[in-house]
Each structure stands twice: as structure tokens, then as C-alpha cells.
Length: 128
Image 1: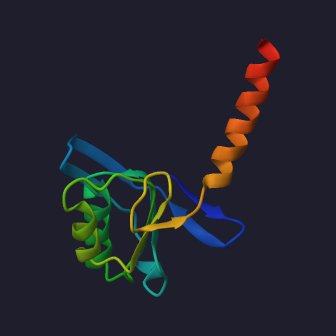
Image 2: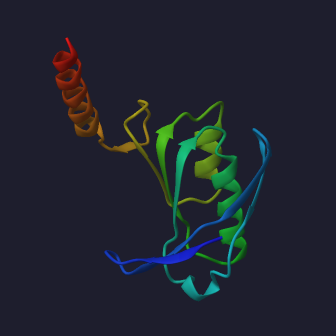
């Protein structure tokens, strides 16, 4: 588990330890966060599929009497009822990138794809 600080927003960063025993069996350990009970936690994960990691973490944060977290995911896979389950777990908001179309999409990464494709095309044409 690592602890750092985000210079731009002047907030602490905590890395949680996760043990995955299966798609729907996840254990998460959280550090001592009680000092931040008046702050809004922001959880970030690359892929939200079953949402078990975030749901488990939200449960720990609720037990620590933390504010409802904002959950951010890069890829909104959301299998089955995962999205509804995550919302029902006690989050204040769920936000994802538009890499997979979903109602939670609020971060537009289209320009990153356009830039990559343009660079790839330039490289491909140089080789021919």
C-alpha cells in the first residue's frame, strides 16, 4: 500500500490492497482514513465490470463514516446489474470515460484516440 500526495489538488492519495479470489469475490483493505471524514473520497479503477472492488471499498468507507465517494472508471463494462449495485452501495456519483458507451460516461477521451490514429497513420505511410 502506498501513500502519496497530489500536488495539483493538494489531497492525499491512498492505494488500497485488493485480493481477487474470483470475478465476484474481492477483498479490499483500506488504510486509516478517519482523518478525512469531512472529505469526499474519489475511487478510481481502470475497468468496472462486476463493480465488486468498488462496492467492497464503498462498504469499508461507509463503516469508517466517510462521505459517499465518487467512483471513476476508465472502461464501463458493467456486467449484469453491476452499475445499479454500485449506485445502491452508497456512492454519490459514478463517472466513466466514453471508451464504452454507457449512461455514466462523463469524461470524453475522443481526442486521445484521434491523436493516436493520426500518429499511427503517419507512421504506417512512412513505411510504405
